[in-house]
Length: 235
Image 1 (cartoon, rainbow, N blue to C red):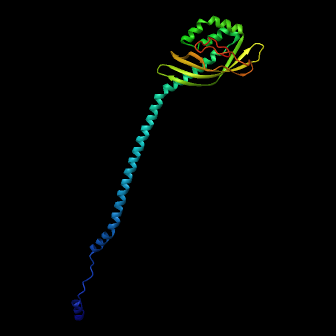
Image 2 (cartoon, one colour):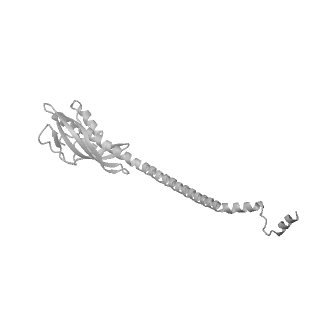
């Protein structure tokens, strides 16, 4: 027993530590790099989220801006678009009415033509109404027409004025003769009277072209500044 105690007293090696704090310290030191890495990833993730949110805000603002701009443009252009469409429809209808003649109702055909006129054109038609009726009955030529093409060439919607190019196929129906088709090319100036657009001036842009049947040479077109009350084929 004395020998065992002597061995213990003579030993100079420090006893192994059994303090629990030593293990905790080691664990903290070991985990420090991992914690720092997680923290870095968290910062990067937060920055990415902020950047994404900012981009989303910019996209939303752009969408709202351009969207409302498109709406503003559509709303501001709508009245002009309506005026253009209505003026073109009026020019087309005026051309059809003025190139239609029902020999069974000459006064009605001339009245239909006048219904599409205004200004000096209407004044001239009213003044020459009886002469036009007599001439239509004497010639005995009926007419019907269709629009081959049309387009607005000028538009001043603020002053309710427009011009249109209208190309027509006019069919001459004479007794004891085969039908003859002519192509007319007209410039029609229209103006808004109340809520309706009407023709105030008509001019021929070229000589009528014979399409089929009829005469080898169509009649001469009337002067541009003197459109007839009821145009005849070739006018």
